[in-house]
Image (cartoon, rainbow, N blue to C red; front, side, top):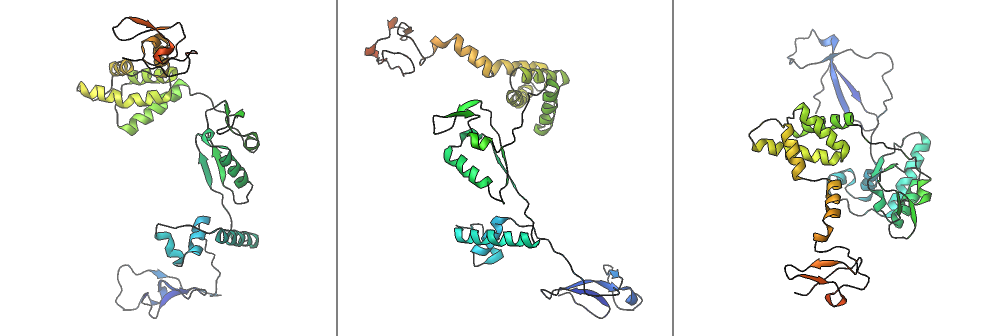
Length: 307
């Protein structure tokens, strides 16, 4: 395959017998052989010809498991469906990897496992993580949550962040701080570039202030809506009037909560006291009673009324 001829410099792999052509020797550069422009001339090696070459292969433990659990061997990685891997195969591979590491033939580079909203896990998942972290080949675990003192899912026990204390004791907790208005402005600038939205400086400053008073997610979602508002009035750039219009049309969580507190009696389903009155839709006001489907407590129960 290499089309080796006299005067070529080659290497032979002692383990596999593979022949690799390095190029043409400089001593044959004056020959009148037909050579193409791609011919490479190399210096003929001197001294000891046998050299040791170290080859490094980067593979994951899962790939090793797949290769040793299928008859296709290495080609099983390209089949797509790896199927189920038996626990006996995993134990044998783990033992072999430990042996290679002790001999210095292999080095384990831990991966990273990131779990967002970790408070949604139940006690069995936390127990599995506790056991997995004790392994020598365990990945670096990074978890994130926005909960305070909360119940562990599936139990009645309360714990910081909704995580069991024995798992919290294994973690390094990173404290986070709210973004400053200047930092929010930088984030919004990058987001505008990603969304391909042209925004005026005063509009961007107003949007950054809105993100400081409400939330960064709300400010990011306003970028596209403000862009659509500017597009509707045939403008290629988002102006401050577009931000104000979108701010009036779409409320944030704080304004929505304030609206619900102000007009809570206008909604069909709401927590009412026994003495509360409601409008039945033009038939005058009627007192809530047990006959209308309201329990004597009157709190936390769905209310149904007959026509």
